[in-house]
Length: 170
Image (tube, rainbow, N blue to C red):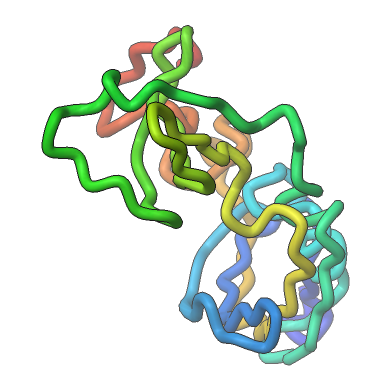
């Protein structure tokens, strides 16, 4: 195969160098490897990287709906303050981990503080935000059979840690 003809396509392992800007501020920068076409990154970015060649640089605007979604008005919860430790520092914007009724741990932010309760925002911190990526395709290769079978790099599912899977997915 002619190396210059290799472009981002489904089932390719992509090394992506990126800078993410939201509302004019850089919120993240780095490099990541992912399996194209398997929903390992936000859909709007994944779709817009298709066809890019190794070494190519592109500015990619991902609307909120194709990134972390719009703000879900149902993703808020009111929790009584007496459910927290006595010395818990209640501060607007403070992030904390909470477990839902199924035991799944989620990130929440305190968005309102009342006398006896707090309101938690369970939306992703970037929900409702357009994402501006400065993206460079730093590397491309064909995925291995194992990567294809798992649908991601590193094997297993996202709820697995290390080599064991407690959720029955692998």
